[in-house]
Length: 197
Length: 225
Image 1: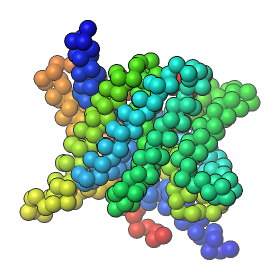
Image 2: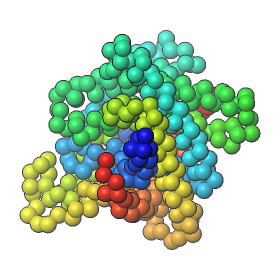
Image 3: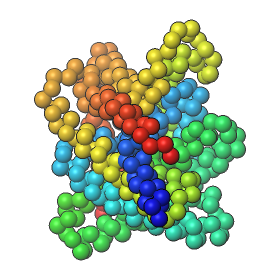
């Protein structure tokens, strides 16, 4: 039991810090650069994102192990997973609109953005590739969500300050954001070797 | 008429390469531009994979454009895209297993490329097969070009070699092949393109940011309602 807990804890730390999706796996960059201009939007995005990520990790694990394995259609995993993700996003959109309209108006736009995000698809694909069990898949989803949230919040706080800085004209906007991300990524390489999995 | 058509096609193709270059101008589909570009071979193969998927998706959507009901078009586009990505994924796993081992995940994630969905939505679903094909080729080549440039510089500086063959006989600057170096390389190249734009082509600065926004909103509206 103890080793099980340690393993899950390690998985969360590894997914959020060491193999941070944004800084070492380079996924979800479009969203990362798109919504990290303001602190408020990036917090909203992080919350929605982590929730959707865990649900989709859980659901795709169930589908993968109880439907796709027995039917021997593992090669269709890309099509099936994208269907699941799109379905969850659409469903949570509808449910949120009915059940919590206030929350919907705050976070609704992020939901639509999420469906074009590659992290949300990468999590089930990696879970399937690494043969994680159910709890491990959930932990991996949670860790990835925390990692993405961390990245977004760090970036947003830097970019809010950057508004006041005098950046050379060709670097204004996207190129500067890239260079900053590079610097953060450099800092994040310091985490490698923290845990050896 | 034939003359007009010809000019049109050339414009369609160059549009994707120069004016709306996916990576440098629209800043879309950035994930693989950094992830797989630490050597030239991976970068080029990834570009070819995207080119193939983009062209095939455009052709398929264009063929089906009259039968797709507008309300369900997005799920159908996703289905078509993921179908072609599966084809690419399986054939690359069989043809180039050593490269596939390093970047298999990123090939599978071509599905989530905003640029492919955007072209299907904005162009292929409204145009005939030949122009859609030209558009796909243009966008694909633009992407291939961007990946080639990025990976060329990264491998040359970071490893001192090209396509696995040693070129420079000096101690390489290791940071360029590290994750962080990818961000630096893309950022600097983007700034360079901006600078060339302002200096020689006389377009206004910050163009890519506006178009990103535009692209995101066009993608958003159908998904939102």
